[in-house]
Length: 285
Image (cartoon, rainbow, N blue to C red; front, side):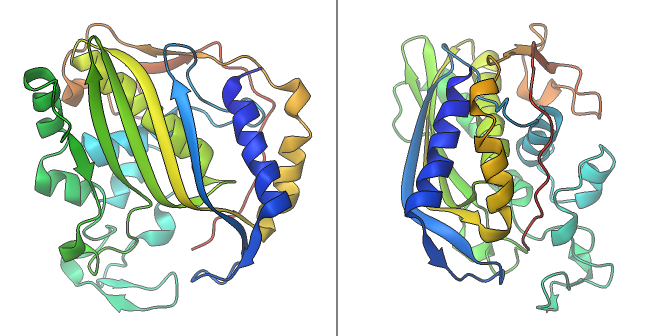
């Protein structure tokens, strides 16, 4: 059984037992606890759930959309079969309607999510600067990516959930701390954990280091009430969980911006991934 499955299901049980009812902007109530931290050692295990199917292409293609393509264009994802940002796409006339707000972003942002995620990484040249500092200033305690940029929040359809991370070099090992302001434990968390574990592995790979620890810190940690039955189904699978797979990265790629970001994702794969099948959950907008 993977350690991540156990840790994740422990969190789910904690929220179901201790979580307080919380009303929020989506209109879909949640059970919420405040503050939770995971710690992973990627030398020991690559974290991806086996008690439900997560897969690697969705998390990693979104990761490459943000940090490699540095894009806010939803069509980039659609072309690769990724639909997770469809609900936050600005219409052709520049208006965002999906949440009923009818916000006018301007036609220049049609088909995008506004000034969020990839738009921010391009504007501030992340992760280029981070890679440079890992190689040239490994002693630095200031190697940070900060997607929470106040000047651009009003023109972002959705402010970043995972908004900050920090790289720390320890001899021949690269570590990362990831901060998430709000976490949909049923849908988002399994995706994001695998995503940022891959991010650490890729950056370590291109800087000649080993991936080490990932400290993953969440503030508003919640399960939507409409997901409770699905979460309980997943908890019932605990004893049947599978061993963790391995992450394979093409050893010939030495530049983060050269990893294949096509639908095939040729340079990044899971080896030996067994899972217990899909569990469907509806997204809240």
